[in-house]
Image (tube, rainbow over all chains, first blue to last red; front, side, top):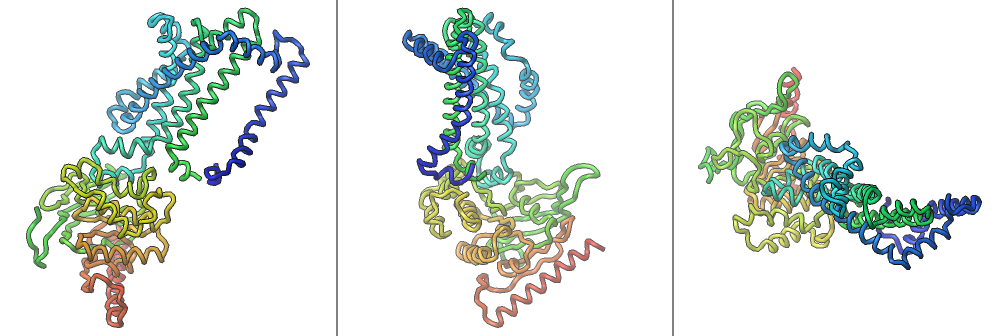
Length: 263
Length: 271
């Protein structure tokens, strides 16, 4: 990123947006060429067939209920993971005792495959939204905690000392110095968490659900309706892209000092 | 509460008694300071001068309460210092501004903390505006630190330190990373500021010229482990930008005295 980016004119923005879409357009073109060559909708439907399937899902209203229930579950999980992970990472980074207490538990539980927890969560929490949100939280919380923790550890000693000599209490130090300094790292953790949230959510929806994009994929596969599988995957990609961009621009806005500093 | 008079008829603000500082433990530890006895008088401009790595900054941080001595004690007004306090403001070499806050918010920082509210600081905004104006930051109030030059950043840092009205201002090579011209301008400003406010200042530097320009008293610290090598009063008016011939002679005499003392300190540790 260069300094010019932040002051770019709308034409420059448009130019960059175009440049960023070349790779995507190229893949779509290859896909379409391949699909036409194979001419087998069951094996590899073309762009047109997938768009038709999407239109069909939209007309029946299934698309909206799927989108709504998937987004709701993913965001619930994401927000719970953030609400718990950020404060936990902050106190673990600052208080050695908190680090001692939580650190080994986190290292132990991090490598457990969260997809493997889905049957347990269904057993304990039922087949509704709760078990799916729980899976998302269980996976998304780790990058939030770890990035927040690293950010706290990286806070320059002189910033802490400045605040202390100006009279900051421990609480004020955490709230007015450690947290703002850590915010860019927190955002990096949140972007990872958002990606993990979608991945785990679809896994959970494919195991047991009656709505959602993950459910739609499994259902369509059973009916050998490959265009719907592709349509659902495309929706997942678009959703994930939109939320990642949202977080990215939010971080640029909230941490302008950080992005300027690293120009 | 202050300790009453010493021989010169001045009040002692800060006092170091038998202060030693050792970093680390065991055979790999380093002794940074050894048996330092020092008194800082109210209103003086005390310069700690020494070669780099001699422990003069460590001594400053001990006075700030950011470090605690291995043996001995640092006292303010007869009370042992156990941690940092807004009564002792610090200006760091690399400014240490909060990069996410604007210039005005950086200066305001200390005024919005509970420590200050307990003391009932009124007119916070007036204090901020006065400091912004006197430090020449009026146009830059809404800028963030990354948009400022080094000299401007250090002006903000000085204003931020002064805002909570500390009794003592501790400055750790504050102009060390600035270019010569900016450095000269800020030296004048700090001398004028010390003169105008009558604040007690402890100033760390390795520059003999800077010490001779600013100090009312210079403490020469020897090479590691840091000990007090010599204490030299500088009997000149506090504002030394009046280059009459006799004044220049006096300045050069101070410079050569300090050079001799520093050479002594270097030779002493190498022997």
